Image 1 (cartoon, rainbow, N blue to C red):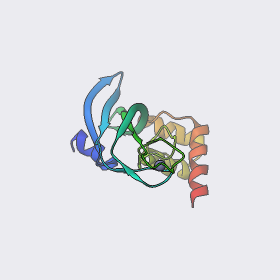
Image 2 (cartoon, rainbow, N blue to C red; image 1 turned 90 degrees about the vertical axis):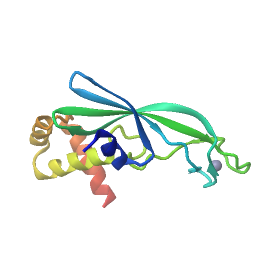
Image 3 (cartoon, rainbow, N blue to C red; image 1 turned 45 degrees about the vertical axis):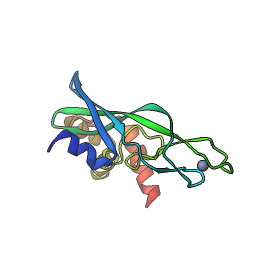
Length: 148
Ligand SMILES: [Zn+2]
């Protein structure tokens, strides 16, 4: 599967603009497609871009490479005079809130974490090129439990 397709699986609006490999990490730089987006505070649609900012998000490893997404996230103007906010960041469905990992990476960590002790999970994950501390594994499991 092509890298671009893997990224589109996360979100169709992601556009890969550059890839580079440094020290066994694949950095994938992405823009998002400009589109009508609902203000997360009031629900009014906007396609007027205010600015962009960068988020760095870890994703599932590809073969022996760790994957980091560098995403230029758009901020849109909210033109609704009654809205408390003049701008809002576009939603990224594949990340939960301010997380630094994709949901699919967290699900993967959760799956391994549930099968074994967190220390052992840390080792197993390291073998599949996911470096994460046992404390973080426990946090991810807890977060998933609370959701169910
Ligand atoms: Zn608004």
